[in-house]
Length: 181
Length: 335
Image (cartoon, rainbow over all chains, first blue to last red; front, side):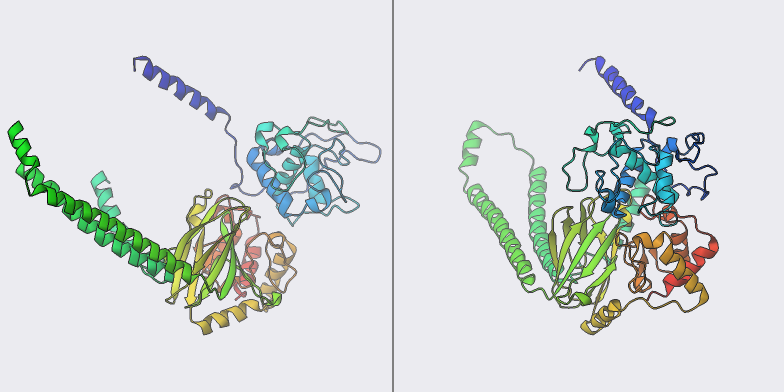
């Protein structure tokens, strides 16, 4: 109980204030994204091989955002994505936790796959989910192969699972390696 | 407002909680009325003891302490008046506590007896932030699925199975009984024996997220005949759209985002993760007691649910005014 006491509180206050520096931004109560079909599809599969378009500007606000990933995780279960993709391990549909990305592994490319649908069974979710929800799903799908910050993913899977929790998933290299990750 | 002003305002508001749709002292349910009896016994015993103790303290303060010598103290301890008074006081405390224990025991026994013969069984599943309700029947085709409302026939014991899909919630219908927690991955239950008809309000009583306040349950206790009529109506599929506008709304609902989550019986809309809307327009409120059921409120909710109840799972789609209008026209037909 000395004069050092207020100084300690001041130091604690300063540390607490530091925590406010990188506050995650939640977007859920914003207006929906403009429903616009992108001029160039972010796919990397083009006949003749075209240049890879730059990363969508929306990626920054979805990638690695804990709230967005949690929402995506919820949608992944409720929209029955696991019916084909299992809980990332794949089944009828391709695995989502490995390093192979048939239509690109960038968040905007995954969102485009969900939005447009893909041959051999992947349905188009355009008009069934909002753009925001599809981007949330894409953010979660990215986390399945360990692409996002460990402090943003859930340490607990909602399903009965024999895979390690997401905080312990090894980061897979994204193939084909295209553009900024 | 000054602190004193705020205190007076609070005192003025508080009695408002004692009457109406959310009243724990009304005794409209068997468990509720048992509780009221127990509460009355406790109130009387505690009030008597409070008065006695306060009186004793006041007398002691008034008489003040006498300067005592050693001789006086010895005399005091052996005084004939204080010993029987102390014995009597101890006996009074023991008797009071015993009476309260016996009263609680019999209240518990009586509540347990209420639940021995349930006639109606339903499951209430809590979600952030709404209630999913299912009335079970041995005949699967007579199972009723609804949301955010329960109807109970008066005098019939109802066994309610409680589940949760996400976090811990708690079901409290003050007029009937409660509370009981709903815990994810675990099944709990509660019994209601409603004794008086009326419209009551249930409420989530365990903080469950930012919209915990807007998680209410409309409870209707009605006569057996009325309940049967309601039940039969709930079993029917939704009526087909009649006007071109309703048809447009129906088409939007069945083909767009709405049907990914919502179910409307008898239509292709068969999502299972959001409130069942088959007889939506027959309910008293929208979005778990968030807004009263009116056309204007419905339009407000459909157009931008995130502005009304921030953070809930229903997204703001960005519909045009015409789309909102047609969907609301269709939803209004779902009586």
